[in-house]
Structure formats: structure tokens, C-alpha cells
Length: 151
Image (cartoon, rainbow, N blue to C red; front, side, top):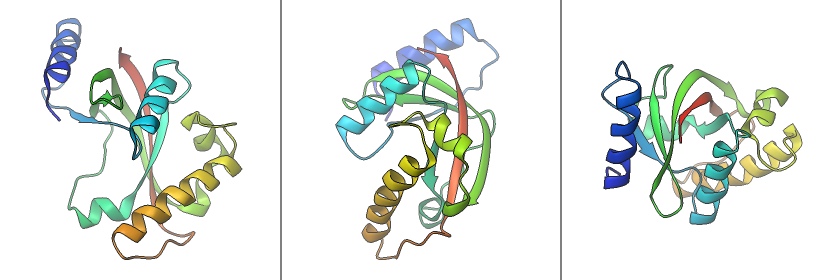
């Protein structure tokens, strides 16, 4: 998405940070308006400083993985820009090796690894169903950490 709120937030950010890169990604967390709003709120509150995504989808769609220094405009459920994040670390690990620390940094639910596994297993199973593949506990997961740069 490259709507006017994306352009406006990026212009404001670049004024304050002239050395910021020229390019950015714009996206919303999750797969629903409600999830996008909830996770954007957690980012704005400073509770969510990490996310996890399905490595297999990057491969299938031939998309580049996130990388350190990548800037992301985070959208709410209405597609409006609410924050700019900068990726500070990226690691690909099997689902069953995602750490308690990463689960905590994702900021969701009670922030435990058990909660993370329950929610993400359900989410990833749905993604795998959509591409006619099976979920297993060894699927590669992209674990990304970020910092809030602008809101």
C-alpha cells in the first residue's frame, strides 16, 4: 500500500531523519482488521517489539526476507499508517525452537511461550492450508525484532 497516510508519515520521518533510507515496506500485522488494530496498538504502547512470520511464504512468493535496517510503515486495520519501525535483528528458526524471550517481545496475550505457540500454530496452520501444505513443528519461522522510530 502506498496511500497518502504512508507518504505523509514517511515525509515527516525523513524530515527528522534525513539519513533514513529512501525505501520502506508498508503492511499490517495479522490477517484481520481486528488483529491489525490490536497489534498496532501493542507496537504504539511499546509492548510489541518483535514479530514472527512464515518463511515458506517468502520462498513461494519469491520475496526478500526482512533485513537489519529495513524500515516498515505499520498500518492499522483501516490501512492507515500509524508507526514506522526499523528492523534490528532477523533470525530464521524452527517453530519449536522459538524462544521464550521472542514470545515475550511479541507482546501478545500473557507473553508466554505457551501462548505464542498456541496462537502461532493456529495462524500458521491456516497459512499452510491456503497453500495446500501441512504445518509441522519444524517449519522455519522468521523471527524479527524491531524498534519504534516514529508514531
